[in-house]
Image (cartoon, rainbow, N blue to C red; front, side, top):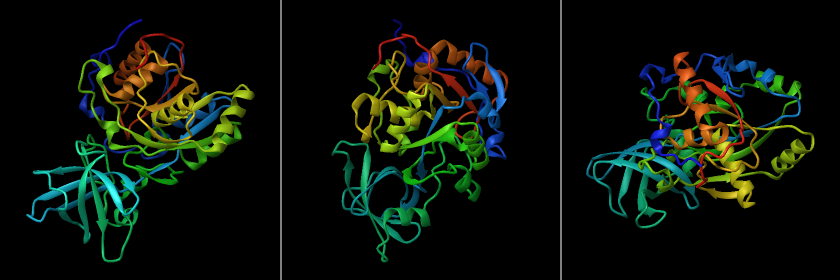
Length: 353
């Protein structure tokens, strides 16, 4: 079986193909059908005709929080905080961008008039994240403070500052559970009219929750992918979704995951039997998929863990060929870009990690 290195998932992307803004209409994005040997170009609103009655669409219903916060240290030095997770007791775990890391006990004055007191590193003394207590005079919780004073945590490759349009479009129409710092971007292409058309065609719908962390943009820094450590994210698979998947199997339908976060959630549940908790599952070629049959996904960064995941599902050579087609046809890439439809293929490219 073939052993892959991170360079196997590289490709050259013209910078002007990185989408800086979403399509004017959610369903107006392009959709590359990669379920057959030859790619076929569509528009996303064509999706109902590419699925079958009895299929089950599984969405990630996480809600993006305004997790980017700005402030300053007692010395006056500027601080940028990206909240990764909300903990009990008005505490948060965050990435910190600052010239010199503050010491535990330091209180930062945040834009909007609230304070952030550093407890220490997280998840332990050597952790790369920082744990803070957020507080203001009104006693507001972190979600309220972020909603009022935070900024949309746009990905690093989007070059403009967040706007009211980003508040609306960097969020799915069915977002329900706040906690993500990155959108489940494949689901951004759906609107209520398309969901209704899919239902009328007999395509069922279910949801899971995975609070996407900033680690989704973390590069793989070692050429040996076995040495890469995935970030951990919280997930939940409701009992009604477990039943919906069983019903789908019974009627001969396909489980269609909307986005890689949904794939990671479903396959984590299948592997462990846990319906809620943290997952750091790393899906690479050779992975034995137990739930997902079809994937709707956006185009991903070169050499990323998400390129490895889609290659594990649909085959490395096939995925790289689809990316070459997409670049030649000038598809738009990454979070605000276009989408593709992939089918799980039986293969054994490499041993799973």
